[in-house]
Image (cartoon, rainbow, N blue to C red; front, top):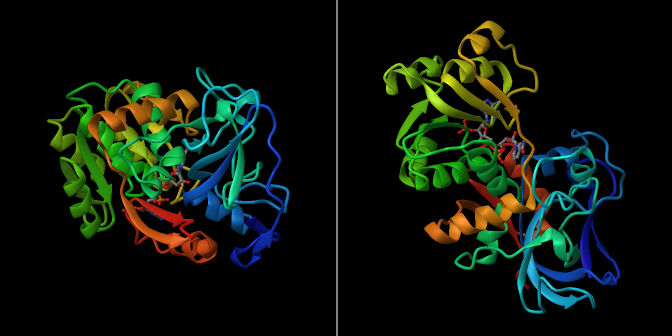
Length: 336
Ligand SMILES: NC(=O)c1ccc[n+]([C@@H]2O[C@H](COP(=O)([O-])OP(=O)(O)OC[C@H]3O[C@@H](n4cnc5c(N)ncnc54)[C@H](OP(=O)(O)O)[C@@H]3O)[C@@H](O)[C@H]2O)c1
């Protein structure tokens, strides 16, 4: 089989190699990959800017494929089924634990940029039946994170106000899911054209943060002074304080992304007075993935795929992430 291996840090360190098809164990599925999708993490790992993972490494965590062989003890899947590996394979359900969240696909574990991938049956999920493989491949990180933030960590109910700061994969999935749940979604972006697309996707209001840098005041204005139940922050940096200020009393900020910086000054007194919960997020469990699939099938929700590249062009596809021109997900196809 062919696979893309990161031999040294840098986009030019990705090398297409031939390797033996892996041998299956009793509980393993051998999955022939059909599609994958990219996350910001993949770009940072390839560049060597996201911790230090031992190389060589097969990068990229998110994908979908078809089960072509199954170990003798496998009961959850059959040959011919579609399967998607969970990004955090050991976190099946419940609260996170250190020992359950260490192993992650695409670093430190080998990821999915490989024609065949071994997946333990307990770390695999059936993708939504109404989605094609490329659409389904966008879910393991972005979709699961959005679902987890809204419904596992968060308890969003109809009428709640959800602010979504950013327009990538998590933001677009969160908008679809929050809207389906009856929440009112306020989308934030630096780009007016992207905001038009977020409104078309289902956001109720949009704020162009390049025109309204004091966007927290605008959120309060739009909510009659109350603020939002939940701010999903996909950007980080200096404006985390505005996320706190945009919350209603007792609201929460989901700290998900850090594209604008990993360090943020926070007015602790404002956070305390307003009893705002600052909650770090790191994707979610297999149970959240399964909850996401159920929610998407119920509403026939379709993730936003901005572009599809051949999987062997992963380096060029990763390079496009930096331009921040995309809305939703960048995907890879294994179509032969
Ligand atoms: N903690 C977790 O579990 C988890 C899971 C998934 C992703 N993430 C992180 O969450 C973030 C979003 O990921 P994603 O895949 O959904 O989206 P993405 O494709 O990484 O896009 C992030 C968005 O952030 C905005 N942005 C980027 N750089 C910015 C800057 N310097 N200043 C202000 N805004 C900026 C852009 O929105 P506009 O162009 O519209 O302004 C961009 O669309 C990333 O940092 C990613 O690493 C974390």
